[in-house]
Length: 189
View (cartoon, rainbow, N blue to C red):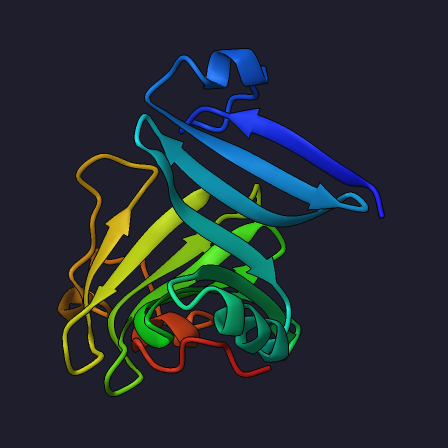
């Protein structure tokens, strides 16, 4: 088993261990056989938190048996999409959950959950152009209806969904049906 350790500042810049000890906050990244398994956040007061990188619920359960205040990045695939769940537990009880859906390297949806009801409560979806540049950000009301489409490429070109279909409005839902409503967060193939 080959264990490798890297150190970064909070911006992800690699730094030597000696420099890490001189700054207020740094991250210790731990790799086993070249697989990133966990990050440890250190402050001037010592270890503040641990983030585990896992790909199964069994791993989460096993880690929670040892560390009941753990946080995870749980990665899996569904319908051809990469799903990353950011999870935090306090005394082995889920206290925070955000789910991000990816196509390749592009995140197409981020959903923050009400952990007591296990339902998404704050959802944003993202659409990219043919050059993989972020083109639109879609936001939704609590009923799941799109309330605003932010144009990330042109200033003052944001779109109010109720104007779609009117004269002089070039935007159409055709081919973008996934973005019209907050649910589903994982596209159907």
